[in-house]
Amino acid sequence: MQSVKNIAEVISQFRCDAAIDSLEAYGSGHINDTYFIKNISERGSDYLLQRINHQIFKDVAQLTENMIMVTCHLKQKLMDSGDGDPEKEVMTLIPAESGKYYYKDSQGDYWRMCYFLKNTRSYDLVETEKQAFEGGKAFGRFQAMLSDMTPGVIHEVIPDFHNIEKRLEQLNEAIREDRLGRLTTVEAELETVRKYAASMRYFQEPAQQQILPRRVIHNDTKFNNVLLNEHDEAQCVIDLDTVMDGYVAFDFGDAIRTIINTAEEDEADLSKIQLNLPLFNAYTQGYFKTAASFITDAEVQSLIKGVLLLPYMQAVRFLTDHINGDQYFKVRFGGHNLQRTRAQLQLLKLLDANSDLLQTVIAREMAYQRQHNV
Image 1 (cartoon, rainbow, N blue to C red):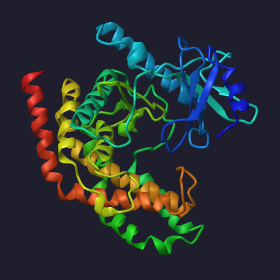
Image 2 (spheres, rainbow, N blue to C red):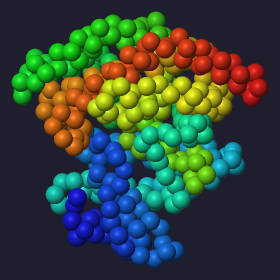
Image 3 (cartoon, rainbow, N blue to C red):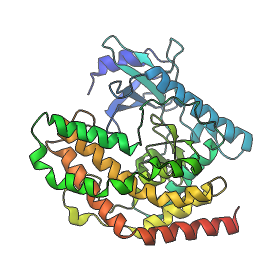
Image 4 (cartoon, one colour):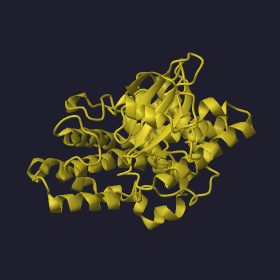
């Protein structure tokens, strides 16, 4: 953790009334460093301060511009509809003294600050069907409110983020270099990756690209990127670093990846990884309750492809990072990325074996919402 002195200096560069009562690391993100700042004054706001990983997000100005465009769009939507509270349901960035919404310190690190939404919480592992339903509602609503935002206006801060062709190229490059001699320990994982590779190119097929609309999407819909209130009702979608153009199936698939799994994404005991079908049903119900108004038939058909692609892609990314020496994702111990890889591949196998059942649920819930609410 950064020293309190250093962080106090950073905080002084933002236009806020933060008087530090306590400071602690916050969240379980793999990329940025996040700190919760509790204000001395009970009436004062609490804050989240983040050090942006500029090795990954190389253009912090573009990253920030994306976040401002999206949050302003969401807040305007809520104000126009009169349905919700923009200050509680959309994250709010705090400007620095320079007028920018980030600050670069003397060590070359980039920081941003936002208000902490009190009486909210997030879950790394979904515990109830209500939570899953609310998560589906939140991400569906997020997509719906951005569905009229023109593709192309958002900067591509991580090129080819969900392009599986590029991810496999990066894996093959890591294999060729084998910097740390780890290939001999990952033969079984590589065999599984190669087995599924051809079927994972769905979104790169020209026929699909012609009928699937590109939209502004979240691109990182882990369940812990939804804040729920004290009643476990969805309040705010957070972590907007990866908001870029893409396909709605990417968001649906990544959310299912974290919701349907009965274990953590890095579970070492693969026997603990099972499919929680009631949670899948609940999430899908919630998702279509808010997304049915804009989603096309082609997109509905593509959702199951996203459900299979995202754990596969995450496994490829974890495996690439393991071979490269753990340079991208934070790790807590040696072999952590390999353990994550194995868990994601096990989840993929289960999803693949049950894909017909999952597709039936998707079709059923979409039909229900169109019949009753659209």
